[in-house]
Length: 481
Image (cartoon, rainbow, N blue to C red; front, side, top):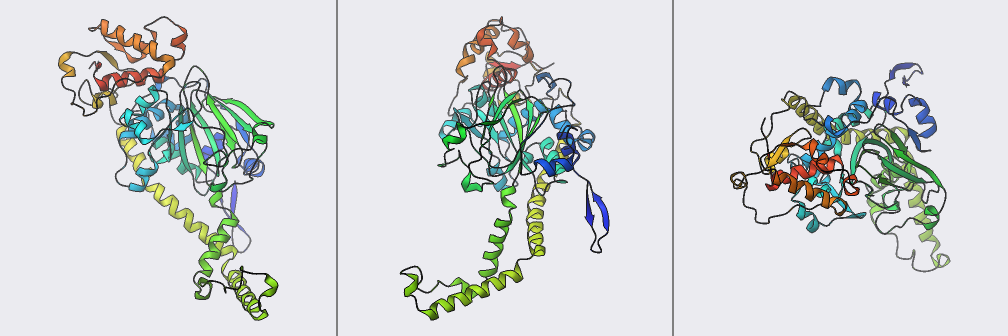
Protein backbone atom coordinates (compact mmCIF):
# COMPACT_ATOMS: atom_id res chain seq x y z
CA UNK A 1 0.00 0.00 0.00
CA UNK A 2 1.43 3.39 -1.00
CA UNK A 3 1.23 6.53 1.12
CA UNK A 4 0.79 10.21 0.35
CA UNK A 5 3.59 12.33 1.81
CA UNK A 6 2.68 15.73 3.26
CA UNK A 7 4.76 18.85 2.45
CA UNK A 8 6.13 18.81 5.99
CA UNK A 9 7.51 15.33 5.46
CA UNK A 10 4.82 13.46 7.36
CA UNK A 11 2.55 10.82 5.91
CA UNK A 12 -1.08 11.35 5.00
CA UNK A 13 -3.70 8.67 4.40
CA UNK A 14 -2.50 5.57 2.52
CA UNK A 15 -3.47 5.12 -1.12
CA UNK A 16 -5.69 2.07 -1.56
CA UNK A 17 -4.51 -0.14 -4.39
CA UNK A 18 -6.95 -1.74 -6.79
CA UNK A 19 -8.78 -4.76 -5.36
CA UNK A 20 -8.86 -6.26 -8.82
CA UNK A 21 -5.09 -5.92 -9.20
CA UNK A 22 -4.57 -7.71 -5.90
CA UNK A 23 -6.89 -10.50 -7.09
CA UNK A 24 -5.26 -10.69 -10.53
CA UNK A 25 -1.90 -11.30 -8.88
CA UNK A 26 -3.52 -14.42 -7.38
CA UNK A 27 -2.22 -13.87 -3.90
CA UNK A 28 1.15 -15.21 -5.05
CA UNK A 29 2.60 -11.72 -5.49
CA UNK A 30 1.81 -8.57 -3.56
CA UNK A 31 1.03 -5.33 -5.36
CA UNK A 32 4.19 -3.82 -3.89
CA UNK A 33 6.30 -6.71 -5.19
CA UNK A 34 4.67 -6.45 -8.60
CA UNK A 35 5.71 -2.82 -9.00
CA UNK A 36 9.21 -3.50 -7.67
CA UNK A 37 9.89 -6.66 -9.68
CA UNK A 38 7.67 -6.85 -12.75
CA UNK A 39 6.39 -3.38 -13.67
CA UNK A 40 8.08 -2.33 -16.96
CA UNK A 41 10.82 -4.91 -16.29
CA UNK A 42 9.70 -8.51 -16.64
CA UNK A 43 6.84 -10.71 -17.80
CA UNK A 44 4.79 -12.39 -15.11
CA UNK A 45 2.35 -15.30 -15.03
CA UNK A 46 -0.31 -15.31 -12.32
CA UNK A 47 -2.45 -18.49 -12.37
CA UNK A 48 -6.11 -18.67 -11.44
CA UNK A 49 -6.57 -19.57 -7.78
CA UNK A 50 -10.29 -18.94 -7.25
CA UNK A 51 -12.12 -20.87 -10.00
CA UNK A 52 -12.65 -24.56 -9.25
CA UNK A 53 -13.67 -25.20 -12.87
CA UNK A 54 -13.89 -23.02 -16.00
CA UNK A 55 -17.26 -21.36 -16.73
CA UNK A 56 -19.36 -23.26 -19.25
CA UNK A 57 -21.65 -22.12 -22.05
CA UNK A 58 -24.76 -22.78 -19.98
CA UNK A 59 -23.66 -20.01 -17.61
CA UNK A 60 -24.41 -17.31 -20.22
CA UNK A 61 -27.28 -15.08 -19.17
CA UNK A 62 -28.63 -11.62 -19.82
CA UNK A 63 -29.24 -11.24 -16.10
CA UNK A 64 -25.73 -12.19 -14.96
CA UNK A 65 -24.79 -8.66 -13.91
CA UNK A 66 -24.63 -8.17 -10.14
CA UNK A 67 -23.55 -4.68 -9.10
CA UNK A 68 -22.76 -5.62 -5.50
CA UNK A 69 -20.48 -8.50 -6.48
CA UNK A 70 -18.79 -6.38 -9.15
CA UNK A 71 -18.04 -3.68 -6.58
CA UNK A 72 -16.54 -6.30 -4.27
CA UNK A 73 -14.20 -7.68 -6.94
CA UNK A 74 -14.57 -6.65 -10.58
CA UNK A 75 -11.91 -9.11 -11.76
CA UNK A 76 -13.57 -12.15 -10.17
CA UNK A 77 -16.97 -11.21 -11.60
CA UNK A 78 -15.49 -10.66 -15.05
CA UNK A 79 -13.96 -14.13 -15.08
CA UNK A 80 -17.01 -15.88 -13.59
CA UNK A 81 -19.20 -14.34 -16.29
CA UNK A 82 -16.84 -14.82 -19.23
CA UNK A 83 -19.51 -16.34 -21.46
CA UNK A 84 -22.01 -13.58 -20.71
CA UNK A 85 -19.35 -10.94 -21.37
CA UNK A 86 -18.52 -12.57 -24.70
CA UNK A 87 -22.11 -12.90 -25.94
CA UNK A 88 -23.02 -9.37 -24.81
CA UNK A 89 -20.08 -7.91 -26.74
CA UNK A 90 -20.98 -9.84 -29.88
CA UNK A 91 -24.60 -8.74 -29.62
CA UNK A 92 -23.77 -5.05 -29.27
CA UNK A 93 -21.82 -4.95 -32.54
CA UNK A 94 -24.94 -3.72 -34.31
CA UNK A 95 -25.71 -1.13 -31.63
CA UNK A 96 -22.86 1.35 -31.88
CA UNK A 97 -23.08 4.32 -29.52
CA UNK A 98 -24.55 7.34 -31.25
CA UNK A 99 -23.68 9.73 -28.43
CA UNK A 100 -19.95 9.64 -29.24
CA UNK A 101 -18.90 9.61 -32.89
CA UNK A 102 -15.21 9.15 -32.07
CA UNK A 103 -15.95 6.26 -29.74
CA UNK A 104 -18.25 4.67 -32.30
CA UNK A 105 -15.40 4.69 -34.81
CA UNK A 106 -12.81 3.43 -32.31
CA UNK A 107 -14.93 0.55 -31.06
CA UNK A 108 -15.98 -0.87 -34.43
CA UNK A 109 -14.92 -4.54 -34.20
CA UNK A 110 -12.12 -5.69 -36.49
CA UNK A 111 -12.39 -9.03 -38.28
CA UNK A 112 -9.37 -11.21 -39.09
CA UNK A 113 -8.91 -14.38 -41.10
CA UNK A 114 -5.56 -16.11 -41.70
CA UNK A 115 -3.89 -13.39 -39.58
CA UNK A 116 -5.06 -10.68 -41.99
CA UNK A 117 -7.65 -7.95 -41.49
CA UNK A 118 -10.76 -8.34 -43.61
CA UNK A 119 -11.57 -5.46 -45.93
CA UNK A 120 -14.85 -3.57 -45.57
CA UNK A 121 -16.04 -5.24 -48.76
CA UNK A 122 -15.39 -8.67 -47.25
CA UNK A 123 -17.12 -7.74 -44.00
CA UNK A 124 -20.33 -6.81 -45.83
CA UNK A 125 -20.96 -10.55 -46.21
CA UNK A 126 -21.85 -10.74 -42.50
CA UNK A 127 -24.24 -7.77 -42.32
CA UNK A 128 -22.58 -6.51 -39.11
CA UNK A 129 -23.23 -9.82 -37.33
CA UNK A 130 -20.19 -10.95 -35.37
CA UNK A 131 -21.92 -14.30 -34.81
CA UNK A 132 -22.01 -14.78 -38.59
CA UNK A 133 -18.35 -13.75 -38.86
CA UNK A 134 -17.19 -16.18 -36.17
CA UNK A 135 -19.24 -19.01 -37.70
CA UNK A 136 -17.32 -18.43 -40.94
CA UNK A 137 -13.95 -18.65 -39.17
CA UNK A 138 -13.20 -15.01 -38.38
CA UNK A 139 -11.38 -13.76 -35.31
CA UNK A 140 -13.01 -10.72 -33.71
CA UNK A 141 -11.08 -7.87 -32.06
CA UNK A 142 -13.01 -5.22 -30.15
CA UNK A 143 -10.98 -2.15 -29.23
CA UNK A 144 -12.03 -0.04 -26.25
CA UNK A 145 -14.23 -2.86 -24.99
CA UNK A 146 -14.36 -1.02 -21.65
CA UNK A 147 -16.83 1.29 -23.38
CA UNK A 148 -18.93 -1.66 -24.54
CA UNK A 149 -19.06 -4.09 -21.63
CA UNK A 150 -20.09 -3.14 -18.07
CA UNK A 151 -17.89 -5.88 -16.58
CA UNK A 152 -14.82 -4.63 -18.43
CA UNK A 153 -15.76 -1.02 -17.66
CA UNK A 154 -15.91 -1.80 -13.95
CA UNK A 155 -12.57 -3.62 -14.07
CA UNK A 156 -10.81 -0.70 -15.78
CA UNK A 157 -12.26 1.83 -13.35
CA UNK A 158 -11.07 -0.25 -10.41
CA UNK A 159 -7.58 -0.75 -11.86
CA UNK A 160 -7.20 3.03 -12.12
CA UNK A 161 -6.70 3.01 -8.37
CA UNK A 162 -3.24 1.61 -9.19
CA UNK A 163 -2.54 2.93 -12.70
CA UNK A 164 -2.94 6.41 -14.27
CA UNK A 165 -5.29 5.29 -17.06
CA UNK A 166 -6.57 1.91 -18.17
CA UNK A 167 -8.51 0.70 -21.19
CA UNK A 168 -9.14 -2.75 -22.65
CA UNK A 169 -9.47 -4.65 -25.92
CA UNK A 170 -10.94 -8.13 -26.39
CA UNK A 171 -9.89 -10.95 -28.70
CA UNK A 172 -12.11 -13.82 -29.84
CA UNK A 173 -10.34 -16.55 -31.81
CA UNK A 174 -11.83 -19.71 -33.41
CA UNK A 175 -10.44 -23.14 -32.39
CA UNK A 176 -6.89 -23.73 -33.59
CA UNK A 177 -6.58 -20.22 -35.06
CA UNK A 178 -4.21 -17.30 -34.56
CA UNK A 179 -5.60 -13.79 -34.86
CA UNK A 180 -2.45 -11.83 -35.73
CA UNK A 181 1.21 -12.68 -36.48
CA UNK A 182 4.04 -12.32 -33.97
CA UNK A 183 4.49 -8.67 -32.97
CA UNK A 184 5.42 -6.29 -30.17
CA UNK A 185 3.18 -3.61 -28.65
CA UNK A 186 3.78 -0.02 -27.55
CA UNK A 187 1.98 -0.53 -24.21
CA UNK A 188 2.21 -2.76 -21.16
CA UNK A 189 -0.63 -5.28 -20.94
CA UNK A 190 -2.41 -7.68 -18.63
CA UNK A 191 -3.91 -10.61 -20.54
CA UNK A 192 -6.92 -12.11 -18.73
CA UNK A 193 -8.24 -15.39 -20.14
CA UNK A 194 -12.04 -15.67 -19.95
CA UNK A 195 -13.30 -18.47 -22.24
CA UNK A 196 -11.37 -21.43 -23.60
CA UNK A 197 -7.60 -21.72 -23.63
CA UNK A 198 -4.89 -19.91 -25.54
CA UNK A 199 -1.24 -20.86 -26.03
CA UNK A 200 1.17 -17.93 -25.68
CA UNK A 201 4.76 -17.72 -26.85
CA UNK A 202 6.90 -14.76 -25.74
CA UNK A 203 10.39 -14.34 -27.20
CA UNK A 204 13.28 -13.44 -24.93
CA UNK A 205 15.13 -11.00 -27.22
CA UNK A 206 13.61 -7.52 -27.36
CA UNK A 207 14.24 -5.84 -30.75
CA UNK A 208 13.32 -2.30 -29.62
CA UNK A 209 13.35 -1.62 -25.86
CA UNK A 210 10.29 0.35 -24.71
CA UNK A 211 9.03 1.05 -28.26
CA UNK A 212 6.89 3.96 -29.35
CA UNK A 213 3.98 3.48 -31.74
CA UNK A 214 6.10 3.80 -34.88
CA UNK A 215 8.58 1.23 -33.51
CA UNK A 216 6.20 -1.72 -33.04
CA UNK A 217 7.73 -4.65 -34.92
CA UNK A 218 5.33 -7.02 -36.64
CA UNK A 219 2.93 -4.19 -37.41
CA UNK A 220 2.78 -2.22 -40.63
CA UNK A 221 6.01 -2.37 -42.61
CA UNK A 222 8.30 -3.05 -39.64
CA UNK A 223 9.09 -6.77 -39.60
CA UNK A 224 10.09 -8.82 -36.58
CA UNK A 225 13.85 -9.52 -36.89
CA UNK A 226 14.60 -13.13 -37.75
CA UNK A 227 17.06 -13.43 -34.87
CA UNK A 228 14.21 -12.73 -32.44
CA UNK A 229 11.95 -15.49 -33.81
CA UNK A 230 14.89 -17.89 -34.15
CA UNK A 231 16.20 -17.00 -30.71
CA UNK A 232 15.30 -18.27 -27.24
CA UNK A 233 11.71 -18.35 -26.00
CA UNK A 234 11.00 -16.68 -22.67
CA UNK A 235 7.50 -18.08 -22.09
CA UNK A 236 5.59 -20.90 -23.77
CA UNK A 237 2.42 -21.37 -21.78
CA UNK A 238 -1.31 -22.10 -22.15
CA UNK A 239 -3.67 -19.72 -20.36
CA UNK A 240 -6.95 -21.09 -18.97
CA UNK A 241 -9.92 -19.05 -17.65
CA UNK A 242 -8.85 -16.84 -14.77
CA UNK A 243 -5.13 -16.96 -15.61
CA UNK A 244 -3.36 -13.61 -15.98
CA UNK A 245 -0.25 -12.75 -17.97
CA UNK A 246 1.61 -9.44 -17.56
CA UNK A 247 3.85 -8.28 -20.40
CA UNK A 248 5.80 -5.00 -20.59
CA UNK A 249 5.89 -3.23 -23.92
CA UNK A 250 8.45 -4.36 -26.45
CA UNK A 251 8.28 -8.13 -26.00
CA UNK A 252 7.55 -9.99 -29.25
CA UNK A 253 4.72 -12.48 -28.75
CA UNK A 254 2.17 -14.61 -30.57
CA UNK A 255 -0.79 -16.68 -29.43
CA UNK A 256 -3.25 -19.21 -30.81
CA UNK A 257 -6.44 -20.84 -29.56
CA UNK A 258 -5.92 -24.48 -28.72
CA UNK A 259 -7.90 -27.08 -30.67
CA UNK A 260 -11.35 -28.01 -29.39
CA UNK A 261 -12.69 -24.62 -28.44
CA UNK A 262 -12.58 -20.88 -29.04
CA UNK A 263 -10.47 -18.48 -27.03
CA UNK A 264 -11.76 -15.22 -25.61
CA UNK A 265 -9.53 -12.95 -23.58
CA UNK A 266 -9.33 -9.36 -22.40
CA UNK A 267 -6.15 -7.38 -22.90
CA UNK A 268 -5.94 -4.61 -20.31
CA UNK A 269 -3.78 -1.88 -21.83
CA UNK A 270 -1.51 0.50 -19.94
CA UNK A 271 -0.31 3.13 -22.41
CA UNK A 272 3.18 3.55 -20.95
CA UNK A 273 4.52 4.97 -24.22
CA UNK A 274 2.35 8.04 -23.54
CA UNK A 275 3.81 8.51 -20.06
CA UNK A 276 7.56 8.57 -20.84
CA UNK A 277 9.81 11.38 -19.67
CA UNK A 278 11.22 11.69 -23.20
CA UNK A 279 7.73 12.20 -24.58
CA UNK A 280 6.74 14.66 -21.86
CA UNK A 281 9.92 16.74 -22.28
CA UNK A 282 9.52 16.73 -26.07
CA UNK A 283 5.92 17.94 -25.82
CA UNK A 284 6.82 20.56 -23.22
CA UNK A 285 9.76 21.78 -25.33
CA UNK A 286 7.56 22.24 -28.37
CA UNK A 287 4.84 23.95 -26.36
CA UNK A 288 7.32 26.31 -24.67
CA UNK A 289 9.39 27.34 -27.69
CA UNK A 290 6.57 27.65 -30.21
CA UNK A 291 5.14 30.41 -28.02
CA UNK A 292 8.27 32.47 -28.77
CA UNK A 293 8.10 34.26 -32.12
CA UNK A 294 11.84 34.08 -32.77
CA UNK A 295 11.80 30.28 -32.50
CA UNK A 296 9.03 29.98 -35.06
CA UNK A 297 11.26 31.42 -37.78
CA UNK A 298 13.60 29.34 -39.93
CA UNK A 299 17.27 29.28 -38.97
CA UNK A 300 19.56 31.39 -41.21
CA UNK A 301 20.06 29.99 -44.71
CA UNK A 302 23.76 29.43 -44.18
CA UNK A 303 23.21 26.51 -41.79
CA UNK A 304 22.93 23.03 -43.23
CA UNK A 305 23.86 24.06 -46.79
CA UNK A 306 27.67 24.11 -46.71
CA UNK A 307 30.55 23.25 -44.38
CA UNK A 308 30.30 24.49 -40.81
CA UNK A 309 33.75 26.09 -41.03
CA UNK A 310 32.63 28.39 -43.86
CA UNK A 311 29.81 29.96 -41.81
CA UNK A 312 30.51 33.44 -40.46
CA UNK A 313 31.40 33.69 -36.77
CA UNK A 314 28.63 36.25 -36.16
CA UNK A 315 26.02 33.82 -37.53
CA UNK A 316 27.32 31.05 -35.29
CA UNK A 317 27.30 33.28 -32.21
CA UNK A 318 23.81 34.53 -32.98
CA UNK A 319 22.41 31.00 -33.26
CA UNK A 320 24.31 29.92 -30.13
CA UNK A 321 22.69 32.76 -28.20
CA UNK A 322 19.27 31.59 -29.39
CA UNK A 323 20.10 28.08 -28.22
CA UNK A 324 21.30 29.33 -24.83
CA UNK A 325 18.12 31.36 -24.44
CA UNK A 326 16.06 28.32 -25.42
CA UNK A 327 17.66 26.15 -22.74
CA UNK A 328 17.11 28.92 -20.18
CA UNK A 329 13.44 29.05 -21.12
CA UNK A 330 13.16 25.27 -20.90
CA UNK A 331 14.87 25.15 -17.50
CA UNK A 332 12.30 27.63 -16.25
CA UNK A 333 9.30 25.98 -17.90
CA UNK A 334 10.08 22.28 -17.52
CA UNK A 335 10.16 21.33 -13.86
CA UNK A 336 9.09 18.36 -11.79
CA UNK A 337 5.93 20.25 -10.92
CA UNK A 338 5.15 21.08 -14.56
CA UNK A 339 5.64 17.44 -15.56
CA UNK A 340 3.28 16.41 -12.76
CA UNK A 341 0.67 18.98 -13.75
CA UNK A 342 0.80 18.06 -17.44
CA UNK A 343 0.38 14.39 -16.62
CA UNK A 344 -2.45 15.16 -14.22
CA UNK A 345 -4.26 17.14 -16.91
CA UNK A 346 -3.78 14.35 -19.45
CA UNK A 347 -4.97 11.61 -17.10
CA UNK A 348 -7.96 13.62 -15.91
CA UNK A 349 -9.04 14.30 -19.48
CA UNK A 350 -8.81 10.64 -20.55
CA UNK A 351 -10.32 9.29 -17.35
CA UNK A 352 -13.23 11.70 -17.27
CA UNK A 353 -14.24 10.93 -20.82
CA UNK A 354 -14.04 7.19 -20.22
CA UNK A 355 -15.86 7.51 -16.89
CA UNK A 356 -18.96 9.03 -18.48
CA UNK A 357 -19.39 6.11 -20.85
CA UNK A 358 -18.47 3.49 -18.26
CA UNK A 359 -20.97 4.83 -15.73
CA UNK A 360 -23.68 4.73 -18.38
CA UNK A 361 -22.84 1.09 -19.12
CA UNK A 362 -22.96 0.12 -15.46
CA UNK A 363 -26.27 1.92 -14.92
CA UNK A 364 -27.85 0.26 -17.94
CA UNK A 365 -26.57 -3.14 -16.81
CA UNK A 366 -28.01 -2.62 -13.33
CA UNK A 367 -31.40 -1.73 -14.79
CA UNK A 368 -31.33 -4.65 -17.22
CA UNK A 369 -30.45 -7.02 -14.37
CA UNK A 370 -34.01 -6.57 -13.15
CA UNK A 371 -35.23 -8.39 -16.25
CA UNK A 372 -36.64 -11.88 -16.40
CA UNK A 373 -34.44 -14.34 -18.32
CA UNK A 374 -37.32 -15.46 -20.52
CA UNK A 375 -38.25 -11.92 -21.54
CA UNK A 376 -37.06 -12.10 -25.13
CA UNK A 377 -37.33 -9.77 -28.12
CA UNK A 378 -40.49 -10.09 -30.20
CA UNK A 379 -41.00 -12.39 -33.17
CA UNK A 380 -39.85 -15.94 -33.75
CA UNK A 381 -37.71 -15.42 -36.88
CA UNK A 382 -35.49 -12.61 -38.12
CA UNK A 383 -32.82 -10.40 -36.59
CA UNK A 384 -34.77 -9.35 -33.51
CA UNK A 385 -35.71 -12.93 -32.65
CA UNK A 386 -32.10 -14.04 -33.17
CA UNK A 387 -30.94 -11.47 -30.62
CA UNK A 388 -32.87 -13.40 -27.98
CA UNK A 389 -31.31 -16.80 -28.70
CA UNK A 390 -29.09 -18.13 -25.90
CA UNK A 391 -27.83 -21.53 -24.80
CA UNK A 392 -31.12 -22.60 -23.20
CA UNK A 393 -33.37 -21.26 -26.00
CA UNK A 394 -35.60 -23.79 -27.78
CA UNK A 395 -35.76 -23.73 -31.59
CA UNK A 396 -37.42 -25.73 -34.35
CA UNK A 397 -37.73 -25.69 -38.12
CA UNK A 398 -39.64 -22.59 -39.20
CA UNK A 399 -42.94 -22.70 -41.07
CA UNK A 400 -43.77 -21.10 -44.41
CA UNK A 401 -45.93 -18.51 -42.67
CA UNK A 402 -43.14 -17.62 -40.25
CA UNK A 403 -40.62 -17.21 -43.05
CA UNK A 404 -43.09 -14.96 -44.86
CA UNK A 405 -42.74 -12.40 -42.04
CA UNK A 406 -39.06 -11.84 -42.83
CA UNK A 407 -38.27 -8.49 -44.47
CA UNK A 408 -37.22 -8.67 -48.09
CA UNK A 409 -33.48 -8.00 -48.24
CA UNK A 410 -31.90 -6.15 -51.13
CA UNK A 411 -28.85 -8.38 -50.68
CA UNK A 412 -29.95 -11.82 -49.47
CA UNK A 413 -27.21 -13.77 -47.71
CA UNK A 414 -26.80 -17.42 -46.87
CA UNK A 415 -25.22 -19.44 -44.09
CA UNK A 416 -21.41 -19.29 -44.23
CA UNK A 417 -19.56 -21.88 -42.13
CA UNK A 418 -15.83 -22.48 -41.76
CA UNK A 419 -14.65 -25.54 -43.64
CA UNK A 420 -13.62 -27.85 -40.79
CA UNK A 421 -17.11 -27.99 -39.29
CA UNK A 422 -19.30 -27.24 -42.31
CA UNK A 423 -20.43 -30.84 -42.91
CA UNK A 424 -21.41 -31.31 -39.28
CA UNK A 425 -23.38 -28.05 -39.20
CA UNK A 426 -25.18 -28.90 -42.43
CA UNK A 427 -26.10 -32.33 -41.05
CA UNK A 428 -27.70 -30.71 -38.00
CA UNK A 429 -29.59 -28.29 -40.21
CA UNK A 430 -31.01 -31.12 -42.30
CA UNK A 431 -31.89 -33.18 -39.23
CA UNK A 432 -33.87 -30.32 -37.67
CA UNK A 433 -35.65 -29.73 -40.97
CA UNK A 434 -36.60 -33.42 -41.29
CA UNK A 435 -38.10 -33.31 -37.80
CA UNK A 436 -39.91 -30.05 -38.51
CA UNK A 437 -42.40 -30.34 -35.67
CA UNK A 438 -39.85 -31.09 -32.95
CA UNK A 439 -38.24 -28.47 -30.72
CA UNK A 440 -34.58 -28.64 -29.73
CA UNK A 441 -32.65 -26.71 -27.14
CA UNK A 442 -29.63 -24.93 -28.59
CA UNK A 443 -27.57 -26.82 -26.02
CA UNK A 444 -28.83 -30.12 -27.51
CA UNK A 445 -27.81 -29.48 -31.11
CA UNK A 446 -24.22 -30.60 -30.77
CA UNK A 447 -25.32 -33.99 -29.43
CA UNK A 448 -27.71 -34.73 -32.30
CA UNK A 449 -25.09 -36.65 -34.24
CA UNK A 450 -22.57 -39.18 -32.93
CA UNK A 451 -19.07 -37.92 -32.20
CA UNK A 452 -16.96 -37.74 -35.35
CA UNK A 453 -13.72 -36.10 -36.35
CA UNK A 454 -15.74 -33.23 -37.80
CA UNK A 455 -17.83 -32.89 -34.65
CA UNK A 456 -14.72 -32.32 -32.54
CA UNK A 457 -14.10 -29.06 -34.41
CA UNK A 458 -17.54 -27.71 -33.47
CA UNK A 459 -17.39 -25.73 -30.23
CA UNK A 460 -20.26 -24.44 -28.10
CA UNK A 461 -19.90 -20.93 -29.51
CA UNK A 462 -20.10 -22.30 -33.06
CA UNK A 463 -23.40 -24.00 -32.16
CA UNK A 464 -24.78 -20.78 -30.66
CA UNK A 465 -23.71 -18.75 -33.72
CA UNK A 466 -25.27 -21.36 -36.00
CA UNK A 467 -28.59 -21.26 -34.12
CA UNK A 468 -28.67 -17.47 -34.11
CA UNK A 469 -27.94 -17.27 -37.82
CA UNK A 470 -30.58 -19.87 -38.69
CA UNK A 471 -33.19 -17.88 -36.73
CA UNK A 472 -32.10 -14.61 -38.33
CA UNK A 473 -32.18 -16.07 -41.84
CA UNK A 474 -35.49 -17.82 -41.21
CA UNK A 475 -34.45 -21.49 -41.30
CA UNK A 476 -35.24 -21.94 -37.59
CA UNK A 477 -37.83 -20.26 -35.40
CA UNK A 478 -37.77 -19.59 -31.66
CA UNK A 479 -40.14 -21.70 -29.58
CA UNK A 480 -41.88 -19.52 -27.01
CA UNK A 481 -42.29 -21.27 -23.67
